[in-house]
Image (tube, rainbow, N blue to C red; front, side):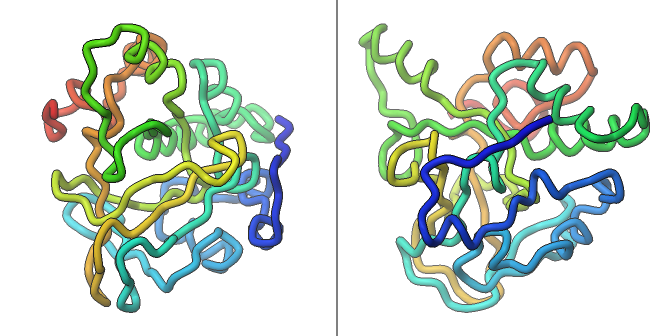
Length: 228
């Protein structure tokens, strides 16, 4: 499976190719140990953070006071950010360089379903879809919505009152996505996403869920994310 980067700048150049260097020796099931394979700087982090176990699995916590609108992490396509457009893309990620190892395939599959998220690059400043009755605008939103994973993932658990937001990188999602502080965040505070901002799972993703009998972090695809 080949990966490439686009729109590299000086900050992007400092980000490791975490996707390409995630080889068969990676334990995808140990989400915190996975973080330790690279420095935070190499993963694109611009602030101090750490991962801890929570009742909902691994969680992300601030390790310093962070002002609102601070860029927390740079996501760059092909380096630490991977886009999925269909089931085949997810399966290719699961098969990459694993020499037919079925256990590894299943571990990557569980990673993909746990960390797969969607992002609307035309959302409002808080990351929510802008209501519209214009069918053309609705279609455009769905066509431009980004589906994918970070490697390693951010570890943002769900909260309907999030303190982070995704924003398109300069140059758009073809270049990457930035994770940004939505408000002032205190040292030790857990960082959250609101999974309702992912929107509705498209048919191909629902097909993935049905094929592998897995839940997804989208409204209507689990028992903890309610419709907005």
